[in-house]
Amino acid sequence: MAKNDTKQESVTDKPVKTKNRAKRTVDQVEKQRRVRMVAEWMMQGNSVEDIMSQIRTMWGLKARQPYTYVQWALDLFKKSIEQTIKERLSFHIATRMRMYKSILEDKELKARERYTLALGVLKDIASLEGLYEEKIHISAKTEHTETIEITLDLGETSDQQEGEQNIIIPLQTSVDNELSEGDS
Image (cartoon, rainbow, N blue to C red; front, side):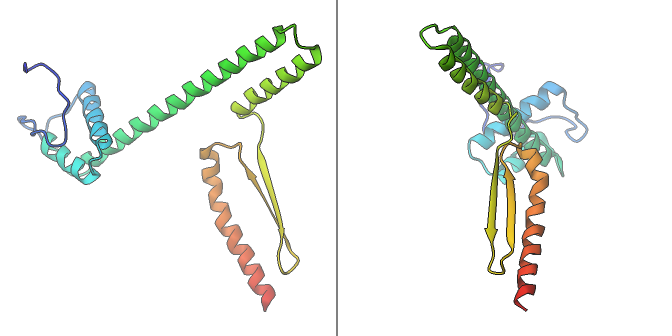
């Protein structure tokens, strides 16, 4: 194999010997190469501890830098998944737009059928785009004839729900306290 040929590196590859490794800074291309290498090691099933040990050995890094490379690799996975989701959403919306056009142009269907089907497609597109709120309302009576009502909004993104998850625990604690006070 020629010296310039690329090969797939694994965690077991030998360290790269460099002069003044402690003072060496890497350019953007080298950083991206390293992040992709760490991501590849993660996909191969290597433990984070093994990966960080290999980072320290191969690149002469100490302290927080190996953690940073692992985090950058995780961010790379996240960005890739988000892009895939956006592409899939675009595909589904474009497909439904073609269906919508086809329905409106289909002269074999009665006008009422065309509009009903077209409206269904438009509602589906709006749902994919998150324009409709999808909620579940739960209502229950307790032994003490109190009514507890909870509404879950399924149309929110995970970022929006993340901030609201903290509400559930205090609410439950509050309800438990009220119920225990009623027993007294």
